[in-house]
Image (cartoon, rainbow, N blue to C red; front, side):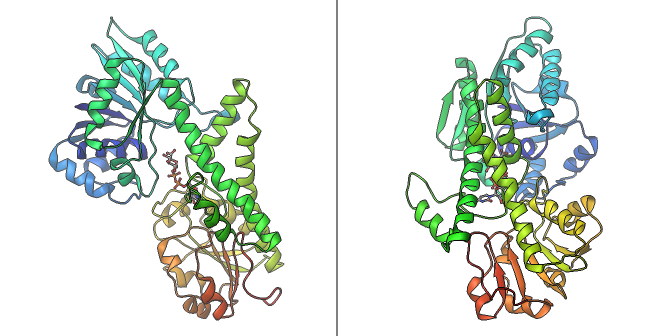
Length: 438
Ligand code: UGA
């Protein structure tokens, strides 16, 4: 099948490359000519495992090419996927200007039947808007269908999530659209859920908000654990073994970040309120998430008493492991609070330091994790990269001025910390080490 992808960001590029991998002929469009030049050179400007290798593979297979011309893509492809950004606009609602512009561009260049598929995360009822926009701007009587095919990939495992999805959701209102999408997805061997366009749009927002709800729920339980002496890992394990609950997304920590959960939860609340449905539960998801990082900062401040001139090592800057994405990363917020309180920071991340430097530069960028902890009054961990999980805490202790750790992801070896006589403060867990010792 000949496919066009409009918007070659994280979702668009991954989708295009995976379609090429499954044998389709793909053209990816982006208006950013610098990015296009890099892509044509086989370079990806963000960190995502397996993506560069597959990009190179499909340069060679000739099943993937890039252009800045939507008209060229519309001429080439019979199915067009809209994958442009929908950032948070005023009052928490998604800003739809890029989707609307793409719909107009497609309409103005379409001369015969095209299937236009929304893959960007869009508010419910966008399908209707895209359809009416195309109808308004289309020249002649070119027929078209609009469909919704929400994306469920996670950054850091985008390729595997796309090639082996749990499910494929397609929202359609014509048999022709369903047939075309079934043909595209036939090589993917995943269960297919066929719905109305409106249901498909809501499935995406409901899924992301539910996952965010699980995280905020366990983070709230973590607070109860801290006050009651219970352990959040034990509680989550006991809950998660119930097949109706499931163990995934019950890791307590300093809250979710990224370009999806914060935005999608806000957007679901905003749109449902606009529809006249109050959204207190959805609003609380975001509130608990914000509080989680504030509580973590307060715990650091409480323990260290005075932050002015304290040296703090910060491990893990990206919003989650295996990405260099800093959007809504708890580390950024925390770094700003610590700096404002007068602390000096020694930061480390396996891949996100260049991106962090563009946002905050008045910190020391460490060569490796132990360079960051060297001489520090405390270590603060924000992101559970594997190399931090596996670190030998004896080496960390030898470099720190004070053997004090705040583990925002509960991923460090608690037993070793105890044996070494260190103080370890996690989330929803009892502290290791006596109070007030350091
Ligand atoms: C999320 C969804 O998981 C994807 O299904 C969806 O396609 C994507 O949003 C999107 O809408 O595009 P992503 O934001 O890449 O994917 O990353 P996740 O793995 O979901 O993690 C999100 C945040 O939740 C991270 O900050 C992570 O640290 C946090 N998290 C996750 C927790 O705090 N606890 C957990 O148990 C799980």
